[in-house]
Amino acid sequence: MNSKKLKILLSLFTLNSLSLYLYFSSHPDHHHSSPSKRSSLSEYSPPHHPLSVKPWPILPSYLPWSHNSETPFRSCEAYFGNGFTRRVDPLKPIAESRRSAGGGGWFRCFYSETLRSSICEGGRIRMVPERIAMSRGGEKLESVIGRGEDEELPNFNDGAFEIEVGGNRSRVGEKLVDEEFLDKYLEDGNIDRHTMRGLIGSIRTVDASEFVCSEWIEEPTLLVTRFEYANVFHTFTDWYSTYVASRVTGLPNRPHVVFVDGHCQKWIEVRAVRDLMGLSESIDCDGASAQELWQKPDTKKTARLSEFGEMIRAAFGFPVDRHHIPKPTSGHNILFVRREDYLAHPRHGGRVQTRLINEQEVFNSIKSWASNHTDCKLNVVNGLFAHMPMKEQVRAIQDAAVIIGAHGAGLTHIVSATPKTVILEIVSSEYRRPHFELIARWKGLEYHAIYLGGSYANPSVVINKLSAILRNLGC
Image 1 (tube, one colour):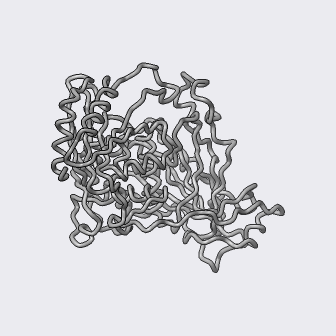
Image 2 (cartoon, rainbow, N blue to C red; image 1 turned 90 degrees about the horizontal axis):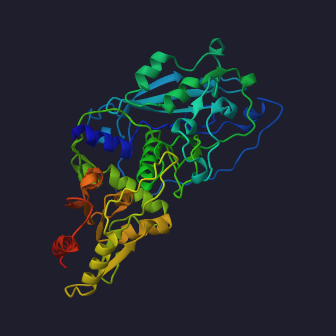
Image 3 (cartoon, rainbow, N blue to C red; image 1 turned 135 degrees about the horizontal axis):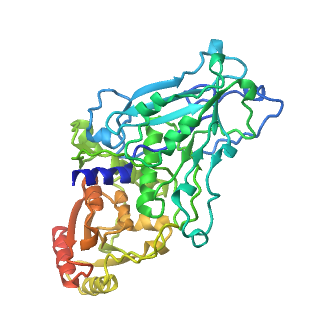
């Protein structure tokens, strides 16, 4: 069970993400190099894009992200991303006094002893797309049924990325890092295909005269390779990885994203990258408010998931101040998260795996019971997320007093739930996995489960459990 919890955490909020930031600047403090230096690289001056990144919102659950080496090993802070405390510099920036007209690149990584992985960033880096092999991507899923995942993941050939060497010309033509560096800071673990390791292992150093780009990107940009990208559960793991990487590297604004994979189209819009790590220890963490942790730090508690959930709500324009979050004035919302069968990816065998065979019956029974409830007004919301824009999905989560549903990816939305929301999960015998119980715990949410003998739920049992929850809410 401990191993399973670790794998769930790491498949939820994996921090071994491909978080290589390409600043294309001449120094590592996130400033921009001057136009004169850029144009000196070649006779052709490539186009530059105006600033278009968005600032970070103010989040009530935000706590500082630091490189403080005193972050306890295997503490909740370290597990949830605030433990990348060991800095290594494969290529240090050139001092201003020694900088040539062409500038010079830089590259550094932050390593987490707890997660045994790194988040890396660099400047004046060039991508060479023709040296990256993968399927074209973006096709209709039905047209690529049977295609293997290896075809969709990038294979970085030698020199797929190049970094400009300024002062130390003796390094020109070398690999940026050797195998010893990769084994130490980007270990394979149990990962079958470690794309971040492959990317960084492909980086070659070049002289300023060879460093010519057809297009410059001045702003922080995150390179993305998606694994298990097919539903909102995996999308949220990607979002969390991106958020952590952005915070660890201290980005002043939200980054741009470049997808580096050959996956086909999916219905959901994805914004990040993830790999799996092979850890085995248990993670014993509970959710707490940032205010509580600020006043009394506790290595067994975390507010990082609440911070992340607020980031999601803020990104869609919803208020995040817990004292000013509007709740429905006409009673309690009971959100029933519905699940639909779908083709997840080209490797999908086509077998329908039903989590709740009488979902419609359960929903209808709850709706009928709620309409006759006299103690208070209950609004049963039909959470057909597959047919709702993402913003409306987040709105439904934010407005809910109780969230109920069968085990399925849609319940991942509870990361955006407000502090007093109650979760009721219906768990079939075939899918007894603690994913959402753990998310609720790490968020500090009240959680209940109904365990089924198969995949049929007795509506009366569900209603009785729901009624008990509402009584505790004063209804």
